Amino acid sequence: MSIKVHWYDDDQTIIQYEFVGEWVWEEFEARYEDTLVMMYSVRHKVDFILDFRHNESFPDGFLDRLIEAAEYNHPNMGIALYVGVPEVMKAVGEMLEMLYPHLVDTYPFEYAATVAEAEATLTRHRSEWA
Image (cartoon, rainbow, N blue to C red; front, side, top):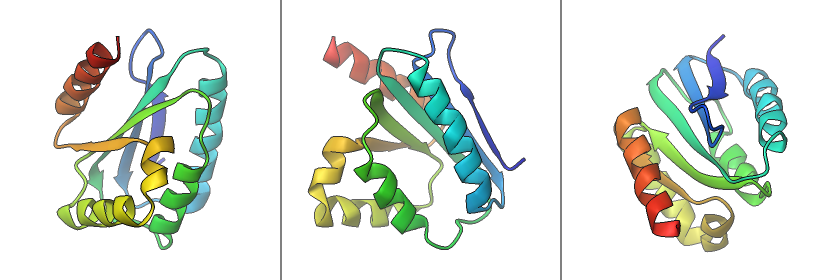
């Protein structure tokens, strides 16, 4: 399995995706269904850590799927931290923010180099929101 999804913390406030090697959309869709079950099982905001450090490639249509995901706003959706994303993908993300500014409201995201940095960013955001 090239995509793993699990609760990152015991309080079930963070879902972690781990992308390893090559993966296909059918696998992502199955893991996304798991994610929805997880999100509906709690009544609080859920943040995401999406770890791409061991990802080998992005399947065709990645940007279109990212936009679709951003347009769907699950009631429990928090912030998404993308870990280990190549610089070119960060540039594409910045371009999407400029072209579709409303998406940032429904799907806030940031980048981190490591999972530890992503966790620290989430901790900082949570203290600001409290």
